[in-house]
Length: 251
Ligand SMILES: Nc1ncnc2c1ncn2[C@@H]1O[C@H](COP(=O)(O)OP(=O)(O)OP(=O)(O)O)[C@@H](O)[C@H]1O
Image (tube, rainbow, N blue to C red; front, side):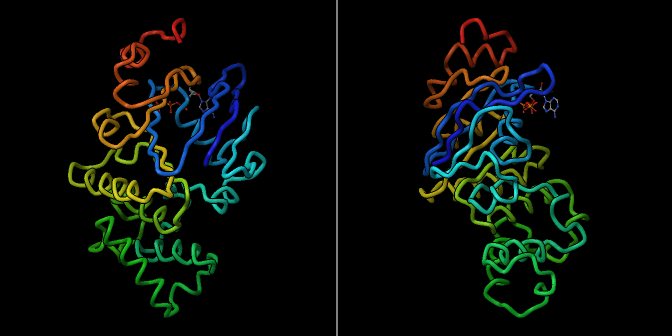
């Protein structure tokens, strides 16, 4: 169970996330929607520990994570797709995934072990690389991959770490039409595991409709709607938010 309580961050005079209290249960995929600049990515950054909150708390299974950095939150079970800059750009696809599998297996990021003969870890890494349809590029350095493949590698590394909470921020953005179904199928497969909590920031409403069990709407940093997808999508607050009009007065 992931919880945010009154989560708030100010940048100078601007409140980017404003007192957001929300609980995310295992077995649920929650889509976070809202217009550009609503605070969705900032809310993710506050949960994953990329930035520190001005006020409020983040808890996972009752443990207060608020004072912890991003790496400690990853160890606690929060998983966010890594940016390539946080990976090893000169290592191959397979080596990057293998390091994540090793880290998950408790062996740490020991580079020397990349070349060791731990077959079961390598087998697991190969399975994940195949699941994201990168098997034919497993020996390509991460930095040399086209954008869509880099995004798939980010998802592969997240899967290798087996977190309790999966956080996806526009996972198919910039992908080719061939790559999009690969990533959506992986998210669908993750959903089948009812012990996992999935958070998805997504602009594409067809994707949201298909995958979400629940939608929350952020607008001007505030949580303005929360509920079943069809109800939330039909609500005036969302219709207006997506038309770019001011919803504050009615929220
Ligand atoms: N580090 C920062 N310093 C100052 N302002 C910031 C910072 N990060 C975000 N903001 C501001 O906070 C607000 C929320 O931004 P955020 O990126 O979270 O919105 P978003 O809902 O993810 O938007 P989009 O859909 O366009 O990605 C914006 O007004 C943005 O300019």
